[in-house]
Image 1: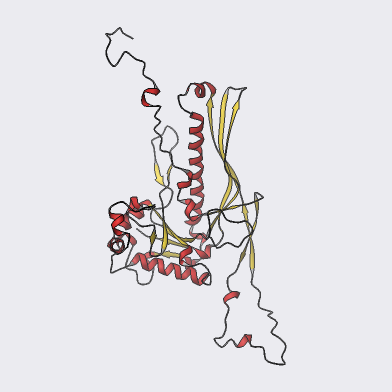
Image 2 (image 1 turned 180 degrees about the vertical axis):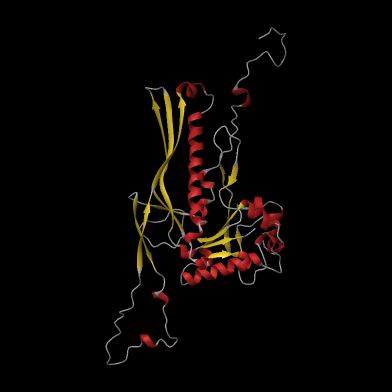
Amino acid sequence: MAATNPGPSNVFIRDHNSSGKMVIDFARNVADFPVNGYAQVVPVEKVGGYYLEMTIEEAGRILSSELDNFVWYDGDPAPEGAEGTESFEWKPFSCVRRTFPFKLGNLTVENASWDIVAQHASIKARQAMTARTQLAVTQLTTSANYAAAHRMDVTAISGNTGKWDASTTARQDIKRSLLTAAEQIADATLDVVRSEDLRLIISGDLAKEIALTQEIVDYIKGSPHALAMVKGELQGGRNVRYGLPNDLYGFELFVESTRKVTSRKGATRAVSSVFPTSNAVLCSRVGELEGVAGAPSFSTLALFAYEEMNVETKNDSDNRRTIGRVTENITAKMVAPASGVLFSNCQ
């Protein structure tokens, strides 16, 4: 380094303390991932097993409006109900253990001016939640997981004129699609799954597009929360950034805005949405985030979890390094596809 005269910028040693040890990192709380709002975690005691799926017919089977087949005439033997049982099917699940690791040399850890181990544990926890989101979205957007009546091209729904991103107040394509799907779910579940149980999931790109449609603009105008939304004062509005309410036509709305990096380290950065832009899903999530093993479930998607978000760090003294990882042993399954509808061709 060449000799220089003293000045205000060269008479001190620059270090991290001068910024108050500021760390620039876009850290998302794992509790804020949208998947927590539409998937249900079911703790399990084994890494694999079966769940029981009942058919949905007998509870609503009425063959005659006069109920003739249920009449028990005096003196006759009581109806025996030989055909009164419901069928069922055992369906398998298998959890898969995945770990999201990191490794830091002890010299790096000792000389870092911030808690570099805790920060990397946080990064890996967010990577695990992104992976969990991918598992859930893949299940929800795989058309083969739905019966034909539960796969709806929005442009082919009776009464619709076109795609959601061009809907108008007169057309009402979005509202009609949702009501049609909700009625299909009511038919399939004998009205056990109600509107208040259903969640609408869309991508950030689709949210941005429908927020600009005349149908949604006019819908929000008539909302009691319209003024607060316009002023950006709507409390607890998880969809405010898209100009959308928390509920749309009586269905809870979740914008699946999670992004994934699909490029390898060192390559040109490639980022995309985990949720497909042209799809939407109307699904059921009954109860809290964590379900109860062994209890009846109406939730469309279950995350069977043998181990979840287990954060571990270890000092490897032999090799003078710190090893860390976040481990999950889970699988995603469409356990109640009758309570969901997959929309396609939304934009």
